[in-house]
Length: 307
Ligand code: GDP
Ligand code: MG
Image (cartoon, helix red, strand yellow):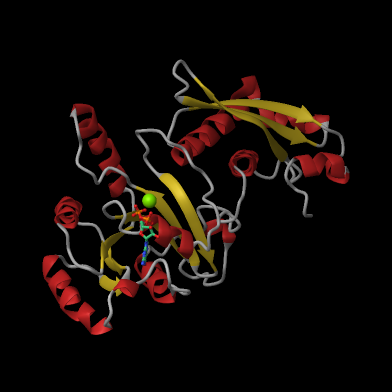
């Protein structure tokens, strides 16, 4: 299995959004947050049998207009360090000054980079691309140079193959079969999964990890509310309920002096913070709903409508 974080970089209008949307077949991105200090803002996820590509946003490749801008640029660039691969876009009409500037910044990071020459539909002859490819090869040791039309192409197999080939092989080398446990996100994540569902899954995973086999897999998590919070609405407040089937397992989940539930909350919160790129206040409650798994009215509410 291969999976990793990929950022799409290029000057405005070069076709980044178009490419991303078409790679993901117009499926919506799962989490969108607009904080200035984004670490890894996730734009979309592409999952296949062979693994998972997580496209992240790394804004800030425009020139900073003031000191605050410069400061923010620093924070934003730090997110580059956390990505596995960069897709750098230019247009088929050739290198522009702004492209060169971005490349100069990129060079400092020395990250694995694929150059994408976009909008090839706008040039009359494919042979005209050859000198551009030559010129590009001299500028930087791009892993590959791939011409596309983000707008017109129907299939991006070449590009997707290339991306997968440079992503890290994670965890389990021996197990060649599809193993969802090795993915960063559930395999459905590139669809229009709600934030509620994703946050609930993170919390549920922590519950199961922290309670091992003491708590059977009959725990559901319901995210009741997601809203901005904090003085300047800079935080995300998430109210969630952990739903148990029976009263007698409640004490296992809560732990001595509430230690277990605190750990669960802390770990889930940290993971969600990475996802949304902001501070999170996780308001976690434990509820007992007798026999919830046999009650469609209840489990549908928890997002298990299809089982
Ligand atoms: P971004 O600013 O880099 O995200 O660029 P966008 O994806 O918003 O694209 C900017 C403009 O270029 C839009 O009008 C797109 O329709 C157009 N565009 C993007 N890719 C292509 C392409 O492959 N061919 C053509 N002809 N136009 C494209
Ligand atoms: Mg865009």
